[in-house]
Image 1 (cartoon, rainbow, N blue to C red):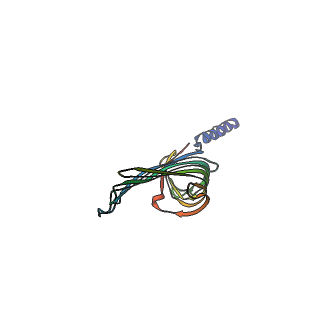
Image 2: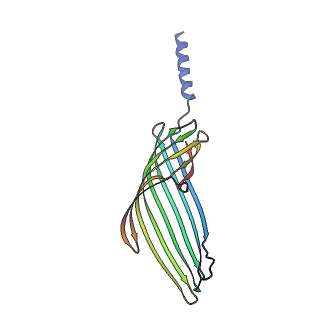
Image 3: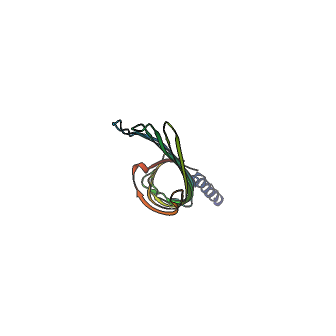
Length: 224
């Protein structure tokens, strides 16, 4: 009888252990965006030049985290972005065409901490705080063309920056391993060391807070 009870207890304990789901500790997430905007700012008066603006932008932000407790995560992040703004001016009183172009790219890497607060069965509020270091480079190009000559000029500069941020984020689990998220800009502190062709070297500090829908980011995450 004693051996039977002991054997039954061992089998029950083993079945309980193996029936429990192995917790998913790793968190892979990312957001990506691409945009293109074109505006025609032409004036109806033939004596004034017509103007058109185009803006294209691309961003990609993957990150990888590890759950060191049930609701808390520590992760590393990468952010890459690129944008191009071009302004055309054509016609008017002068037989000339010109454009002004600003090309900017940046890359940064950092660490972050995130807390997952359950609001419903599959719905979470996940504030995220972190810091990142990065570089930003920009190039300004302008050109004017007339019947007799073409004039072009270039300016370039670079920035090394430190970023501190606090972002509110909402997450929804579609399944045990897959979900979607929506993050907001929130609070951001920027400290940069700029090198510009015109103004020379200078240091910039900026503090911002925004919940503007234009700054919202949609992404997906995977648990494994």
